[in-house]
Length: 441
Image 1: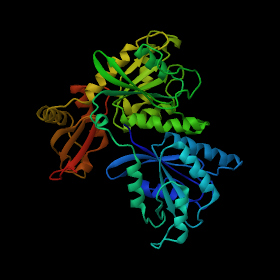
Image 2: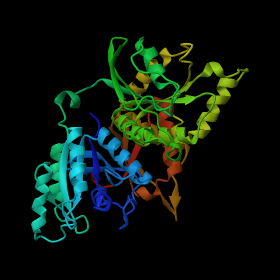
Image 3: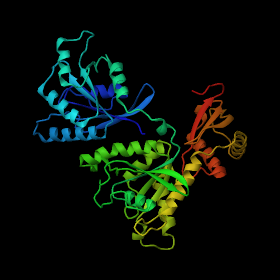
Image 4: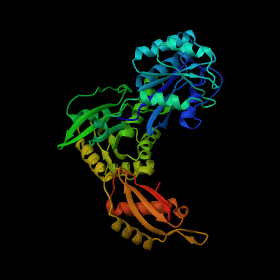
C-alpha cells in the first residue's frame, strides 16, 4: 500500500490553503483572502504519528456556480476526491452553516469515503453557539480548528489519521519485487505490460491519458513473484489541460514511491524530453532502481553506431542517473522485451547488495592513495572509517574529521570507485558523512 492520500475540500475562502500549509510545515499554497485563488490542486508530503501521507489542496467548490473557473475547480475537487483515501471537509466557523455547505456535504456522502469535518476560523478557545449547527451536515462530530492560530490542529490530524486505510500485515510483509512502468502518456507502458503478461490485461489506446490510475498486476517470471505497476502517464504541468491527467500525476508519483524498480519508457522518435528528465528525477530522488527503456526502436533508421550514439545522448541528458541501464526495445515487434524483466530483476538484486566493511575500507584506502582527499585552508579531509549501513538503496556512512571538506566532486569519485568494484548498476548510492564521535541519528 502506498501513502494514503488526503484531499482538503470545501467552499472558497474557508481557509483550506492555510490549513494545508500548516500541516505541510511550509508555505506551498498561495494564501489570499479572495475566493478562487487556489485554482489548481497542489500536493505535498506530510507526516503525522509516524505515518506519511500525500495531501491535496483543492480549489473551492461552489456546487451551483456556472462560472467557468469555479466549475473547473469543482471538477478538480471531485477528481481529488476520486483518488483520495480520506477527505478533510473544511467549513467556515465565522460564516456559519450555509446552503453550499449542505450541498457539498451531500456530494461527499455520495462518494462513500471517510470524511473528517473541520470547522475553521474558531480563533479562540471559546466555542461559538453556531458551531453546533454543523452537526446538521450528518458527517459526524465537527472539529474546531484555527488554521491561523494553529488551535485544534492536532485533534484534526488525529481524526484524519484514524480515517486512513489500515496497513495490512500482508502489505507490510510483501517481499515481492514491485516494478513501476513510468513515463509520458502514449509511450507504450500498458502495451509493454501486456507483452510481459502475455495477455491484453490493460487497456491500450493511442489517446493520451487512457490509463487513469495505477494498476497493480501480480506476475510470475522465472518462478519468482513480482508486481507490475502500470502508472498513468505524467505530463508537464503547463501541458496538462484535462483534469483527469492532473489527477493521474498523484497516483503515478505514489506508484514510484512504493515500487522497487522504475522502468522509465522513452519514445525513441521524440528522444529525451524535459518531462522525461522530471519523471526520471522523481525515481532518482526516491532512491529507486531505474531501468531506461527506449521504446519504438523499430521506427528509427539505423546506421553503424546509432544505438551507441543514442545511449550517449541519453547519458548526457540524464546526467544524474548515469548508473541506469539503457535498453532499446520495440513492444510492437516484441523486440528485446524480455530483457526488460531480466534487467529489472538484476537491478533489484543490486539494490539489496551489501559490501563487507573490510573490503569497503580497503577500497577507500586505495582510492585515497590514488587521489588524495581535498583540503581547505591547509586542512585535509581524513576518512577514518566507512560502512554500508543500509540497502534499497545502498547507504554508506563515512566517519571523517570534517564533513564540510567532503566535496561533491570527491564523493562522486568515491562513488565511481565503489561502482567499478561492485557494479550497483541501476541503483543510486546514498552517502552520509559524520564527524568523528558523532552518533547516527
